Image (cartoon, rainbow, N blue to C red; front, side, top):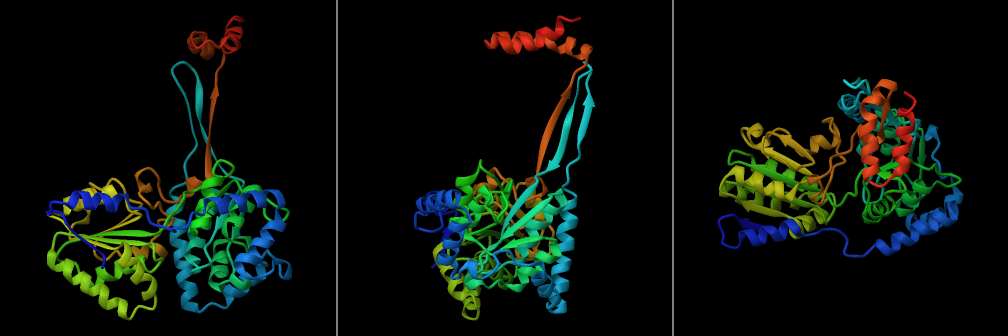
Amino acid sequence: MPLRLDSTDADFEARFTDLVEARRGSDEDVSRDVAAIIADVKARGDVAVAQYTARFDGFDPAAMDVRIAKEHCCMALDGLDAELREALELAAARIRAFHEKQRPEDSETTDEAGVRMGSRWSAVETAGLYVPGGRAAYPSSVLMNAIPAMVAGVERIAMVTPTPDGEINPLVLAAAEIAGVQEIYRIGGAQAVAALAFGTDTIPRADVITGPGNAWVAEAKRQLYGTVGIDMVAGPSEIVVIADGEADPHWISADLLSQAEHDPTSQSILFTDDESLAEAVATGVARQLRNLPTAKTAGKSWEDNGAIILVRTLDQAVELSNRLAPEHLELAVRDPDMLFENVRHAGSVFLGRTTPEAVGDYVGGPNHVLPTGRRARFSSGLSVLDFMKRTSFLGCDDDALAAIGPAAVALAEAEGLPAHAKSVAMRLSRR
């Protein structure tokens, strides 16, 4: 049974704290295995990548090209059902339009002392995109990762995706073609992340790696951060739904299952101030699971990690949700903006009863690569900025240096750094 909590119970705080602090994910400690894979790929490059690909994906890369030819992407796009192609193109257009508004502007100013200063933005040269391909293939992830990189102006985009038995979902290829990805490699797992981080004879070295993956992928990104930039260390998916008594329990049940079906370690939580709705949703989830093709996964997720929490007020629900800092937050209430004002921690928020989280996974526009595991307290979803860097600049003429230089000399001397002081003082002495 999923967890049932009532905020009026004497032990509520302790039990809710346990829920907040619980860590989901693989029970297996993958850190040592990932470290070994990374070291091997760094030492042996393509040879190591090929061996791990044969071991984990069941095919020999030597028997086929590791890089997927562009004509395969074109064929996949041309072979799509017209309705599905239109859906992908609509999603791409909306994602592009949203992210184009994120492009930062360069800045420059000259202050009262005559010092010229500012910032200039530029894209990274090479971005590595990881697209899952194991438990499921996600063309939407191609669009969500590739389009922000394109908008940022990244010169080279290399996409990696696992291809069990050497086969790749044509939808992934079609999405890559729509997004404009020119390089796709049929490798995945920690070995693919390591290959992008260090570069091999086949795989380009990336400046930043983005995209979701399994526990091995997440751990590889964590270990390689610093060698390469990353978007985030993503964990199991999660959703919090805050619903009032007027919400449709069938809709809410489907919303909860929409995340539960991702993985057995996913988490779906309902907060409501209406006991009747809580009971109806519990019944609704059980009923929908009977006919859901992904019931085995979704049922396990709901049983192990799901929760229905009865609260005194919806304001209290927001307070509790902030402690969870969920990846996705649905406000299925009459006036979502009133609650939204008090939301401090969430990866993405979905406003109103007719805005299910699933629409954001595909065609909403904002990115669906979001922080999980309470990381929304300090991080944000994938954006154009993940593929860009800011360079500040400073310029002083003689008068400007005369105005601020003596203070720099004084501070350098106070810190015991005489060479710092001298480098400024020598220029001041010419006047």
